[in-house]
Image (cartoon, rainbow, N blue to C red; front, side, top):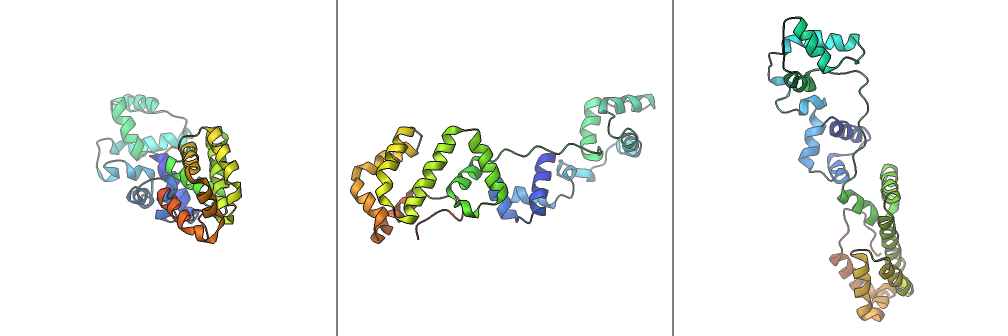
Length: 231
């Protein structure tokens, strides 16, 4: 929860809107809205700070001890100190209460969240020129870890180039490469193009081929705005 809150707040500070953040993370808009409205991640905890607790009277002392030790003190040690002061508290109760009531200084920055499948598909199918620098870097990191996905990315880019530049003569080579790759979805699509290859090449070459191209995009819709489509 802390990592998600920090991530949403960071994207907001970069100027992204709620809808853009929802698409970027693959979350629902209302979920993003909840994180955006919370001033602190602790406010996202069920019940929030509005629910009183018998441990609230110890908050000033415990927060002071955290500050005095520069955050080095642990929940176990805080529990022992409370016990020495005559206030024994179950460890689990103190731990859960501290999550929403106490703050540790210099908390490590949360690790970046793994991009959703929806986000990665959007990065692959959108024109590279409209990707942000952060999206480009995240896509590169994903492709570096998966050779099959990198090959899929290259095939999608090459096919998009044929669509936009009307270079249908390149289609047979693309089909051979796609079929040899044995990639789910891509290979089957390439095999289907061979059933009427001459018509497909004409559709990718002639201006009147826009009807066929339009049918392709209806059958294989892009994810999000900015998807590479024919002029």
